[in-house]
Image 1 (cartoon, rainbow, N blue to C red):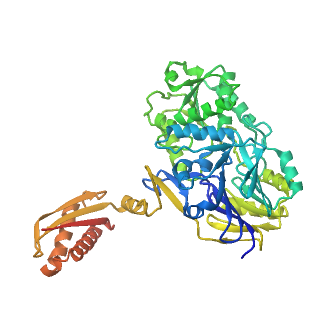
Image 2: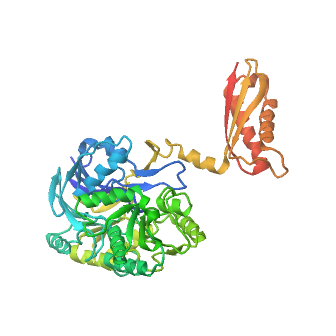
Image 3: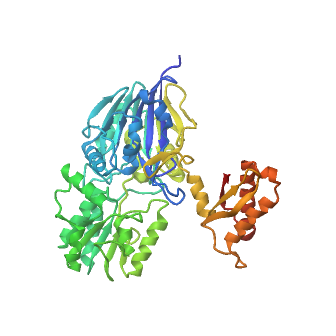
Length: 554
């Protein structure tokens, strides 16, 4: 029997931003016990027509379901816990998290259709809990949401430090500062491996404090002559507090626009956060406040079409509108891939003569992730034998790997989603297990790219669809005229000929070229008509649409 080993395997969140899910395994090959860390989601975009959300592939976990000791959530951002409501029932394993995340799961579940009842085992920050073969310590770190945690995971093979999302901020606004003293103690204990955030590994220096952002917002709101609206991530409770305090400092009322914002605010208040802020008003109060006495907090910082900011910018919001001279502060950073949607919103605001301020114009945003100087400090404190860069795109991971080597780390492992890295119990190395993959949520259904028909939808969006219905006698005679339906096809060609006529020509072209005996073979006839129609349309359009042929034999 093979000897016990300690392995790390990310299923999501490596080589990308979002969809974080990682596994730690202890035991011999084929009989490991597993700990899942985070259960995140990514948001679909134009490359995934019809899909709403993207999850890491669960099939390996489902195979190992009886060997999973538990699931630990580091903090309450969607890219770290958002898959729970769609996928947790496939595993039905214990979930461990701090009180803020537990309340957030409960609150979100109340608004999700057919949401499962997910019991969350509450763990205090700083506490340790035994989860099967894993002893897990929740270490407070600063982030843009309360109760973010790094994890000290102890096994029979040693201590692994999973950083989660973190930054250094001695004035975080909401929640605790990163527990530097504890990281130094862990370094003295001996850290086998550091699995660490790479998001800002390309940026030199250290992050500014959340308090600096609050001071900048206070200054900008003080200069504004009319309404001010600030958009940020709904989960950024520290930023919500900064905006509310900046509004109060300028004798303005704070209006909250967006259900997701209200959900996070209510959970934060239940947990004892957001106490030193003025009362939040609802969007129904917006229109009754003087223009120079209001600050609106909005969802939609990433240009989401259904979020408050996009609807207001497009003149579609029932309660909130902007006027010439109003000011919108984008208190966030664009997530890669969202630039087009964000620019569309900004352009719509500009058409209304609204003043727009972004992080390029003023210190209105601070990242929740460590820059290079912060990463250097983490390596100095913890002195790991192995470094595994995660949470970032390729360029971030490579930059982080170079930094770790420069800091004297002996082994720096290259991993990607679906790869396995052996940390102890044999040669330290990583390799592709071919277990990476994605699942897509489309409405109420979850499946693979192929199962959800996303590839076909993508093709349809480029080339359109033609449906043809024929009635054929048992003698191979075509009865009546073909029925046709064209979707996403141009109306006419360059010579002004109708495409429906072109399609009909393709149908009869196929039929005339076939003997009656062959027409009796439904499959042969169907394929001949399909190919002929595609070819005929291609001659006039230079594109080949998808064609479906239905034949009724009478």
